[in-house]
Image 1 (cartoon, rainbow, N blue to C red):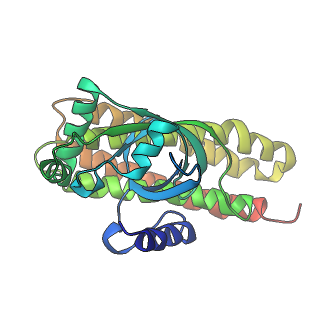
Image 2: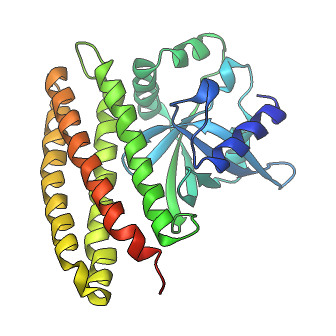
Length: 276
């Protein structure tokens, strides 16, 4: 991609917390900042990614061009990179996958999007697959705690909407990457709710006893959502899963989660952003 086009995408990504329109509307996209192998200067590139539970995967396709993209060469020289996902900015360690693991994941990507196979067919090089493992990070980049909560919630809403669409279009079977997408979402949601229960909710209980009924309801809803998450994990984890059953479970989770997130925002954002 030309640098000026890249910069337009970068600016739109940062201005809209990871949402980009046009040909990238609905795409899973990150901004990947690497250190130039020759210049030593930071180099930021928009890159599509695949969820993979506790890591993300990026594919050095370069549109099927004859040479690996610059960001890939940079990672070979220095595997420490910065990832922006629209909500969080964090440091990641890059690991180039090889052998059977690389082939299995690339096949998974092709099953989900045949465009990857078209890129591979255009070039003699074997297109690399790179895993990015978070090694350090911080809180969401937002103007306030309430705004941060809304950003995180909106990221879950967006990912669940993508999964709903993918499940709806899945046809007679659930692809391997779609299963991973579901399991990654479930893992992230469980982690978020556990952190809320042990962190934010616990802190608010000590400061605002009047919030006890709302926090009790939110915790109870966390329990109901955890049961729905466990059920969805069970369904998509079955190699013989019925796609219709998966669709029903995703819809049930979506309905329950959306109501929960809305209620939590109504109850807590005014408190988080109110006068200290």
